Length: 350
Image (tube, rainbow, N blue to C red; front, side, top):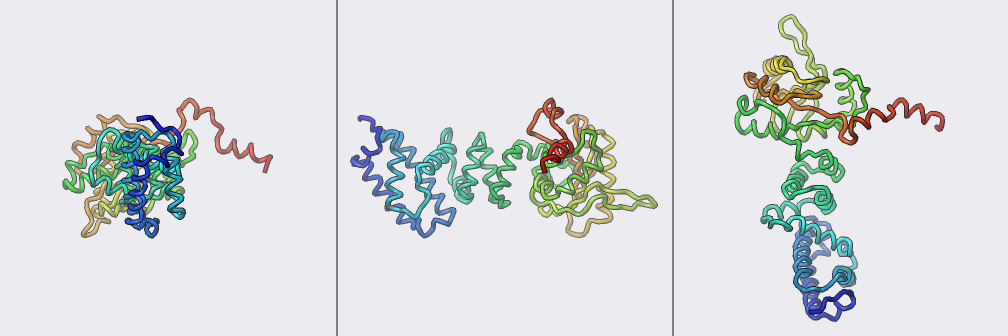
């Protein structure tokens, strides 16, 4: 069969004309005009269309002008539907190929895909390297209602690679169901690239910076964290103690104590945090609350040292690192001007 390279040839091709007629009937049968704003209906149609396009291009040998001609014919028949541009038809084909190029995904994942807005779907396939990673962001978008900007932030900060990677003793200190949920709730490392701190920042400055950017901080912590306060006062005996940050987690149904360390993890950090967790359990925890969880965020940690330190701790604790930036290597960061220098440089122009 001679390969057709010009889109005009398709208008005379009987096989194409027959398929186009069937496709137009399918559009009308699904009442796509009326349901164009209903995401799942639209995307279910896109999925079938993508499958059809891939198969037709492989079998019919219709040439490079196929999508251009198809776009022209569909837009002429359905001028009110914007999704039939040549560009979007290419996206539809790419979307289907992404999930079926190496394997066929089941009906359940497809049912999840069509619940996510089209723009979100395109962000996911353009930035993810595997089906497993893409489906992770699909499921989380559905569960947490992420906007497109939040989704993009989560992908670009490698949430999929960081989730559930914290060193913890949850398996031995929490019931199985809560242990699994707590482990998946935490990540390693945390990325605080929204902070601008001096090179010699201390823990107080780190704490203050996180609170001043509480919206971004909560986004990085993940869904479910409710901020309760900083330097929360606890009195034990005649002594006063202060928890760096206190949260309540609405999915875990427990308090979360966060301690910040600007240096390397040390075993004694776990002991101190263990004491704070015990105190919160005794003084703040109420009936219906699950056991309080501790999080220790440090600049660096030796994984084996952290595992040893947590092995005999009776309270649930996770140890994760944090990063202030992901975008530039250290050798370049030191060459950049500080915020103060930038402001001084702009002073003469304002």
